[in-house]
Length: 436
Ligand code: EPU
Image (cartoon, rainbow, N blue to C red; front, top):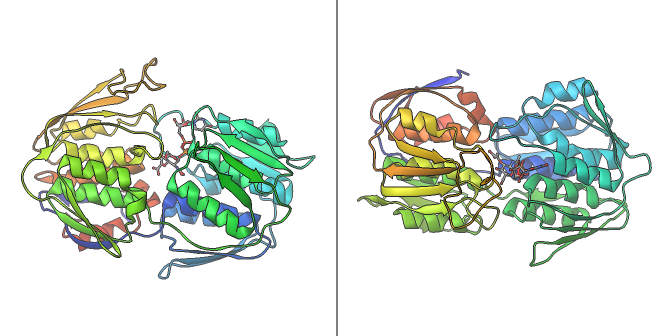
């Protein structure tokens, strides 16, 4: 498939599409299957390249995995789990950060795990210190080697008391996936409680885990000796839903997203409405549309759940280029998530970046040299440009900008978008976009 796309913008996107399971849940649910002594079934699995990468990693470790693209049903039998070669893991994982989450389950099931050099989107340093600290506290030994970090659990894994410095999604998942079969009780304070994590907790409970979540974002896990497989349907990808909603707003369109779940989008829907977008929640999804007239500027900051997600920020910023007045967006989750605005500026947008925290809350990036606040001045007419996609969410936002712009844009590097947006080319065609 070609890695570039030619977009002729200026046409409002209109029509209906379906969004399936969440990339940031499905990949973890697949990893959880490694903990089960009987086969697991995961439903609503989207055909995205991250699912392909995790499937490959599970197969490398001896999992018998079958995936029916059309029904979205995936079965995983991990009864013949084996250790995989470090080089093969690294080759297969490519740019994915998932191998780090395999560690707990693999240490329980095989006594060993390997973390190759990790990739993922380049949106800041993306360290893994929280993960390594957690694994070590559980009793894992970590040996650096030329092909990555080699982990072992010579004395098994034992429950821990842990407080996260920052409510990291991945570190919370790491702890859950390790604690459920560790000996004794584990407690976690300052945990992340995103809907994807709550879905992971539900799934682990189906497998036989004992987990309770308190109102103060603390989690307690009572380790058990054995877990069985699960049958679970993934929640919908709320990042993809919000991305299409922003595409409707930026192009003056009207998009019904089947599968969209209001309960996972509360903060996004509030902001969408404040900016001037309208939506109607139906039985099976949400219709997002631009009602006509000018959009309104807004001040917001990204945050952990239940705040405004960092992954909603980039598509929204494109829509804000069409809003009247000055909008302020303070990014508090990643230190460098405004790189994509360079392309927007080349297309005619007015965006200024600042090192200061431009919000009512100071964040941990305020004392450093990170341009993590943006001021967007609008509305500005966008014109077509040649763009290289920087990362997954920034890349999709470039596509939205190209669709909203007058004229032709050549967007290259779009393969990255396949990591998290199922069949986006087909969906664009269904919405009447002019793309080649
Ligand atoms: N952090 C550390 N040390 C660590 C781990 C994280 O300092 O060991 C910091 C990060 O650098 C970042 C912050 O903590 O500044 C939050 O990172 P978090 O661990 O929450 O992110 P993640 O688990 O690596 C997941 C999603 C991201 C999403 C974030 C926040 C997956 C595979 N990725 O990443 O999704 O932005 O949570 O919600 O679940 C995407 O889908 O495009 C994407 C980047």
